[in-house]
Image 1: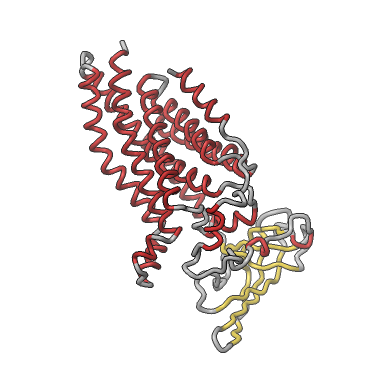
Image 2: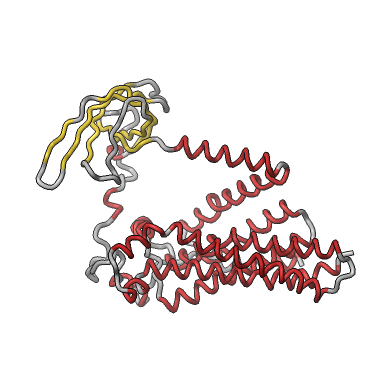
Length: 401
């Protein structure tokens, strides 16, 4: 069984050939140019209002090099206001001290300028605050320097530390294994999946391979090298593949472009050789991975416990018992997956409701249709993993002596 699984992974990997950009006669590209990506009418010859790459620094231009430093605000002068007809510009003269990098301890005078009433970009600096400053030009040149943002990374690091501590205190050895598998999954994403996507490889086979590798390592580490883990692995992989197929099928019917988000639009100007529709479906596969893995391992573990309590149970009865357990888990896990997508899309949903858009317009927007496909396809994959895992448990576990 393991040999067959490895051979299948090799065959899938052989399909991950570099993918070119959309072909010139591809109707999806023409639809993209005429699509309503921002709920407004965009001319066909102008797919985006502006090229985000125009604001990016030139790669080999030393005058546009960006160097970021952590700093602490030492002194803040009284803010000055410049009143205009429709807006107010506020300027703060601040003195900051660099607290990181080769120029630690250096003091800089910076003019912090922002528009009053703009909650996205404006922030009033206070003494003692930690900020991130950016200097343009060669390293060590602080002729062009400004405050980029408030320093927020410490809160993230503290929360990660609490997460690891709680995981170890409650899970002990299982918690340590969880941290190990989480680290390996992150490594696979950043060292395997993302670099190969940027090289132009086909996203869907890469996502299936990465998901299979992460599932195999995670479940073997958590559950051990046994039939229970093998059943969970095969059931989970089947669910992930079903989720990908459903997303591809529904996405093709709905003619999703993969450009439903501003990040995808910006990525288009960075690298036009990426298969953006494939990238969308690959994201659905990766996004459903966690929930499907959870339900696959839960059903396999339940089947193993049933087998241990009743060693002489038949394969049919074991299938029925584990399927009943899977049905109970299925409802809560599908709800969890949908709520995760709804939670992430809450601002967008509020925006749609706030403008009281017509339902016909809402459901046909690329962004909305994409979120529907993402959530429902992942839920279908999760549901499909239940009977497949139960069937594999009924076939394989009774053979164990």
